[in-house]
Image (cartoon, rainbow, N blue to C red):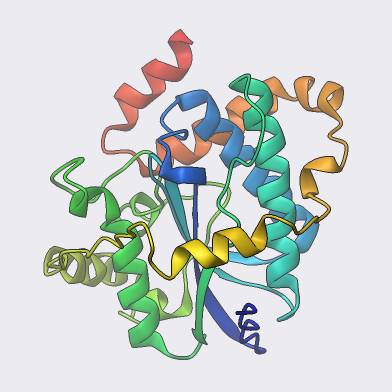
Length: 255
């Protein structure tokens, strides 16, 4: 069965999820997360899209973004997944696919404020729903800039968030209350067994030869020169979003 074409429309936001290959926990290392934030900032500069929500988990990433043009979404994800895969494979001394074959995306009109708020909350609640922590503050999501109204250098507020009140403080207070009411739903796991419908698809795909984005060259020497810039981007994001900025600042000062 061929892939269904993506429904790309103007003035749409997209909730995008991308997972590590085999759902391996390859995003645990702080160095990888710092490089990911730097890569995301570079992709924003390259494609000029709006990023409203971000959450980097141990084996997957959530975004809420709005591309400048509808057809930019696959370009953004192609470049970002290629660039980070090349970096991570070099850092982790590994080869092969880093990300799963295809990212998942669901779109909605950027004027659908209720859908936008629900998506923002769902993304920000991921660490809490995964029992990684009790609250919503998380070093590698942008909940903090919605609660404390800071600037992390990468994300911005969605108009739905800004519509919650007449002042930014009121918007933050109402969004904080909105998040506290969140009750995560249990997630069902997809299980595949020998002889299922999955096996014929795997066998059919074996003979296909495709040009991999990994065959493109990565200017690694130029990337290494930006190590201080990588740390600056990550530090600004983490300090703006973490639970305790003073403790996070000590981590960056000591490293």
